[in-house]
Amino acid sequence: MRLFDELTRIKHSSHLMQPNRSFVLALACCLALSTAARDTQPSRPVVPDLASERKPRPLSLAECIQLALEHNLDIQIQRYNPIIDQYTLDLSYAGYEPTFNFSAQKSFNSSPGNFIPGSSVQNPSFVTESANFNPEILGTLPTGLTYDVTGPLSKRIQNSTNTTWSANPGINLSQPLLRNFWIDNTRLQIRLNKANLKISEQALRQQIMATVTSVKTAYYNLIFDRENVDVEATALKLAQQLAAENKKKVEVGTLAPLDEKQAESQAASSEAALLLARHTLVTQENTLKSLLSDNYADWANVTPVPTEQLSAEPQPMNLQDSWRRAVTLRPDYLEQKLNVEKQNVTLKYDFNQLFPELNVTGSYGRNAFNSSFNGALDDIRTDQNDFYSYGAVVSIPIGNSGPRASYKSGKASLKQILLQLKQLEQTILVAVDNDVGQVESTLEQVGATREARIYAEDALAAEQKKLENGKSTSFQVLQLISNLTTARSAEIQALANYNIALAQLSLDEGSTLEKDRIDLKVK
Image (cartoon, rainbow, N blue to C red; front, top):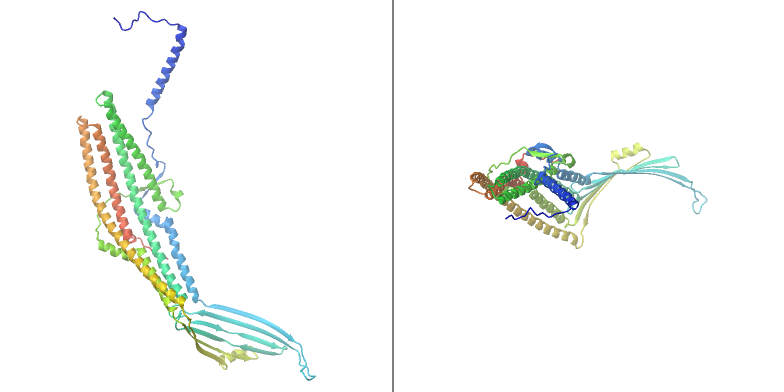
């Protein structure tokens, strides 16, 4: 007995069935084309290389440091501060430059004659012409002595016949003996501006050291990111290879479809990790380029390629020596010591202002009066009519509350600055101690991660052989591939961290310039 009776078929009109046949045929063609198109498309997008269109430029670490010293904008900006402070210091010395004054005046006076009271006698009219010249040089010496040298000269003509010349050249001096004697405002500003110049030089030194450290950090991170891209690419290749092998095994029926999906999932995860690693690499390239250039557009299409390899060369560590170098070389510590020096100078000035003014004064000169100019000069030369004076001027402020308050405020400020110096010293000691521990720790991590990477490679190789012999699973191999990728990345990161830790220790010690043989000369 047959399940379907083909002898008795249902009869349909051919006119009714013809449209249905066309619809079914069209639907089948669409499904076939859709399936073919889906089969020809890749399973996942191709991983783009974000830096493929850029021109590579090989760079050593020394070349990067040199480019940063020449083109880094932070250094260029900071380099102007010593120049500005030098001009400010030069301006302070202008207080000792003498000033020359000169005045000239000509006058005319015509007076009518008049009668003498009580008589008929009339005084004659007269006409007077005069010319006055007054040259003067005045200034202050570094001892606080003020001087004023004058040479007044006048010519007088009366009724166009009587001509007389007179001159009174002389010098006036005033020397303080108490207030403004050992220091005054001009000397105060000079000493403060000298300290400011030294502070700006140390700030420039600090900026150069910080920039060099940033360049080293960016350079070592760039090496890590480039090698990390290779690690992720290798992981993707292994995952894709395993996924392809599993697909073949599934097709021949020797492997479950679940293992194929696990391999494809791992390949997709590896692809995402590679994309992230390449993006991080481009970002790190931009970080390094921003440190090396003052015109980023010139580097936009350039890919910096480090020519050096990461290595871990053990360095002798001595905490006491590092502390000694830090309090000797650190620019910020030296800046704070200069602030203490500035406050001591200010306090010295404030103390001097507590005293009353006691000035010794004196003057000397010669008088000349003659009918001719040469005769007046002869009178001055022969010292026939001289004049002089000497004395003292005392000025005692009643109460003197202003200078006393200023002096007390200066003493409190000095104590505060000394505490800030102590605080900075403690911060430096802690930072250096941490840096030494970081260097030692990362060096140990280099050895440990290297061993972990070797073990991960051996474990993966053994597991792959077991998989080939049917004694393992794809899941275990995928797990070991992930472990190997992590171990390789960790080893490279440990190498980069060790070199970065050494650079940071040099910065906190203040020995970056000496260790990198950078000769800094501030002009």
